[in-house]
Length: 383
Image 1 (cartoon, rainbow, N blue to C red):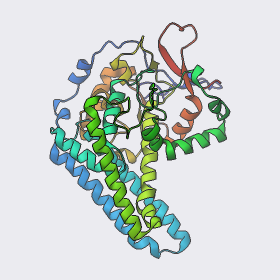
Image 2 (image 1 turned 90 degrees about the horizontal axis):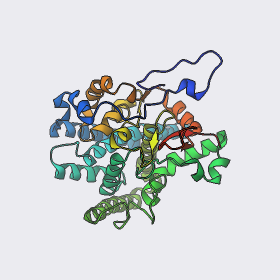
Image 3 (image 1 turned 180 degrees about the vertical axis):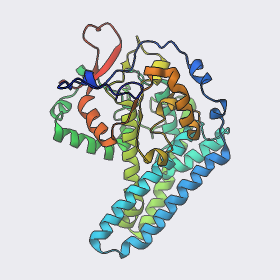
Image 4 (image 1 turned 180 degrees about the horizontal axis):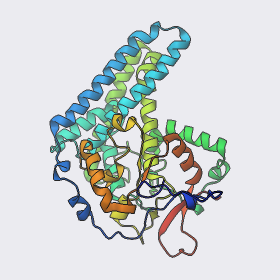
């Protein structure tokens, strides 16, 4: 899938990556952020409290119905079918709760309403219910948006240069190893990122989303980190009391299983948005905000695009205008494509195929041969 959503067709017999993947331009674009904004209808930047809350009510209503049906009726199924029933519930509920996660994500960007206090209140409640430290994530994620594509300052899924590849990555650069890494990433990646900043930006000292004195936070942000911790702790205490009343198995089946699906989707969505053979990364000599924001890719998740409130297929416009509500993002994305041209990247590769390809081809980044003095880096996999 090439830049602008077009796929280059290689000549018969040739299957090299350079024939299939057309790189996004890395030179400074001729257009400005203002030019892009002018192409978007003004109403796309308007936030509606009622419309935003309608998505909260819709998602929570479906989640409640799924929870009621599963907790009431799956127990009456015979054993083999009950296992399948719980698995189906986890997947469906995990998809719906990922949509709830996305709405809370909008709150963190001040895209939910015109009132910051309302955004933070709704975001804190929704994210805490999913064991996410709202303010902690909000501030680290804001820095990600401010430094996307920067090898030194980006906050999440920062690729390694070849010299920084560890021995374990070399030993796991094979099909069984990739399966192991993907399973590990999708199950433990999110909690490890929150607790130990795994796959995040390098800091000179220990970085943790639960620590108000973590180097990723400023002095004015530290009190809100404690509020985030209190929100997660309150939900954890509620789960403990529920476990005492209903049993660990019941709580895991009703809450824990869907949460694992949410965490897996969150990691996979973010990974595929920022990992692609066509995308450049920049060091400090080349990076600027606009080129960094354009170093991301829209993906097609089929029907899940709507379930996930289009965070999957409008991510480029989201990085350019993060305060725009999701219900206007599709219209805005269509409006800016003619301006962006080849700087816009869309990949319609089926998600699991894309996940495997990126895990195989995007191992580290390096400069092209002959461009050793340039600060532009591209993915490679030759170890």
